[in-house]
Image (cartoon, rainbow, N blue to C red; front, side, top):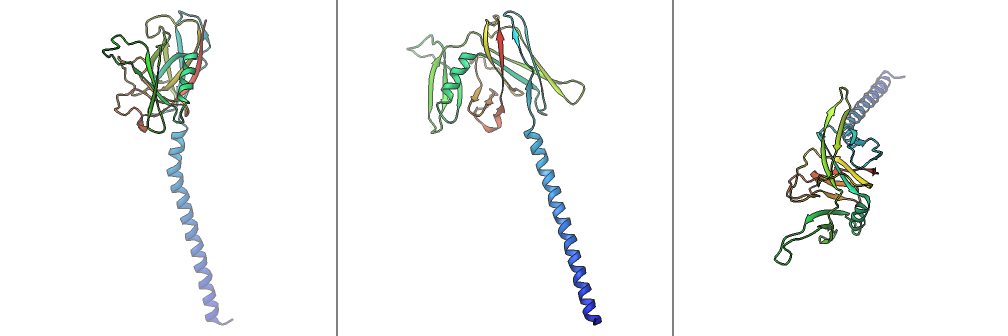
Length: 231
């Protein structure tokens, strides 16, 4: 074979090898960068709050609701106990529109209604309108919070001790729905016993945090459900 042709073929083969090496390095770099970008997102999406089985309790006894959380920023857990039939009624009304978003607002005092009773359940409809219906305030309602602490390992645990209802009474016998959420920025609202917003269709909660816009996407938290039976 002619020396010049042999040299040309060798150079061509070497260039191909270099091109293949550069391609492999570039591909590995893209995979590495993608892994860096995606992994934290997946970790965030996997952060959860869990609740231990609550079981059955006797009216008048203290109820300690406990669980764990992997949410790094969670400092406080919120617990809301609502009679199950009452919660079911809320859900039925919320699902009357595709948004599923509802919130309770106190009934305004007017010249025609000096001593208002009950509370208004307001639904935020997909077309931008609002609908509402008046409901009685449940007598066996509890809204409470408890701290999140580390148990010496990586696991974070929480505990909320329920002693009395909002009216400082023992919880009556019955079946109750329990909401659990990240209440790190929760603020007490003395004017509204049920201040949180719910997206029941998507099982989300918008805690009362003092935001002007309760439905701000940054205010959205996952909502966990449990059941409590009191005898």
